Amino acid sequence: MNKKLYKVWRQMTADKKRFGVMLSLAAVGLLLWGRLILLEKVPRIATADPDAAEQADGPAAAPPRELPTVAVDLPEELSLNLFALRPDRYNRIPEPEEGEGEVQLGDPIDDEWERREALLDEARGMTLQGVIQGHQPFALIDDVRVHVGDSVGGFVLIELDFRQRLVKLRSESFEDLVVILRMSDG
Image (cartoon, rainbow, N blue to C red; front, side, top):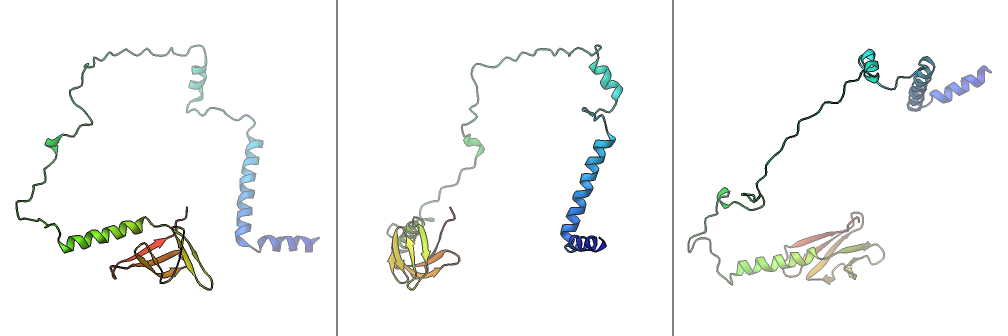
């Protein structure tokens, strides 16, 4: 019998974490069990003064207090619109004088900026649906199968990353513009 008890004790204390959890659960169980045995009549209401609680439950309880009624006269028409902006509360931005900060139409820098923004808008509209590994890896972008070096929407696919589920695209017209498309989790 001693060998069996020793074997059970060794198995229980082999993992300290499990043993600690088991001891804490046993302690909580003993506390709850002891509470049931020691307290035959469990109080249902916690009060600071038990005599005052008995008096309040008895027939001599004080009647509820009457509160006075207050009447408020509201105007029929509101003088202030809460949702209207008040221009006197905001500082106006001064308008530039003639010749100051003006951009000429047809400026090559402005046209290049607009083309870049149009390309970026097009890239924001693209959806990466999958990155497929294999003998010839490819990406599925907007239901189109694209291999490395292929063109899609004004961009050339330059890199596939299977682990991070992303692709890198370089603009055909701007060599320094690189866009990264990631697969969404949803």
